[in-house]
Amino acid sequence: MKFLVLFGSQSYEHEISIVSAISMKKVIKNEIIYVFIDKNRDMYHIPTDKIKSNLFSSGDYKKFDLVSINQNGFTKKKLFSNQSLEFDVVLNLVHGGDGEDGTLASLLKFFNIPFIGPRNIASVVSFNKFMTKSYAKEINVKTLECNYFTKDCEVKVDNYPVIIKPTNLGSSIGVSIVKSDEELDYALDVAFEFDDSIIIEPFIKNVKEYNLAGTKIDNEFVFSIIEEPQKEEFLDFDKKYLDFNRVETIISANITKELENKLKDNFKKIYNKTFEGALIRCDFFVIEDEVYLNEINSIPGSMANYLFDDFNDVINKLANKLPQEKYIEINYEYVNKIQNAKGKA
Image (spheres, rainbow, N blue to C red):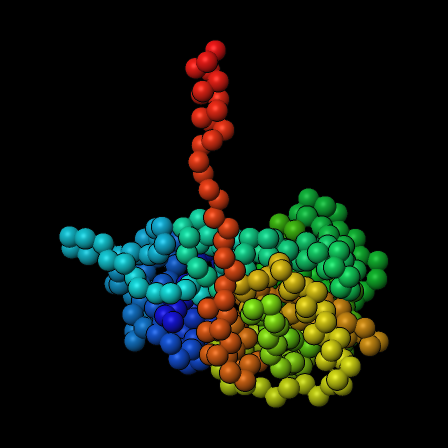
């Protein structure tokens, strides 16, 4: 099994994607091909032995071959011909826009390229935090109540503290805890800098948080260990960013079997058939013994490899059991009937 790791692209989480992609060298034992998408959405084949973070900040990645996407794969131009990149499956590691909003999923599907990552519908329900809450409600998973605002709305807050989040961003980018009216305008300016809409939730101090990653292979769920992330008030961008290059397995949270089962049951409801083909991480709150979904990470940082005892085994098994697209037979029967009918007339 040979993986093609797709990373970068037009996203506020562009740099995080680079860090995640580089970390794969340490945890995937298979051969890896890297294709970097720059801010202009041009694609470059980055030799695996050359990849390092300053290659991208310096612009030196442009020394390498440009890549084009086409039916069933990717090619790069040679002197008198095109050369196909040989791989078995794409690992979509583009965080945020393009990767998690369904753009690349649509492109890969259109060109009949097998990939690990969220499909279109999964991207819709996980990328937008307000849509996530609607989805959770329909599948009987609890979430915190929220208010939704766009840039042209008057924002009012009745009870502090609250947490303000851009609707379509991850990695805690643009997120603020607001404790008074005096802090509100600045927090709104920060959030609206990154997105045209926001959600405002009650901020619950010292709430218990747990992260659980997993996937479904041959209709059987494969779970990671359950992590209790270390935080101060909340996991801000800097803490998450430094975490994205983790490759060492962490210690499992010290929780009861009952709570473990509750978290896994909620994960199963969320994943169901919607997220087939993806390895996701769900972040949960636990309040008075009740489990609440905080967010769905449809392409988690570094693929949440550090939560699995044997990530390489999991990602290979998933790559071999991806959902198959239904082939639609086009035979022009209806058009031919019309033509025949016209001929008789």
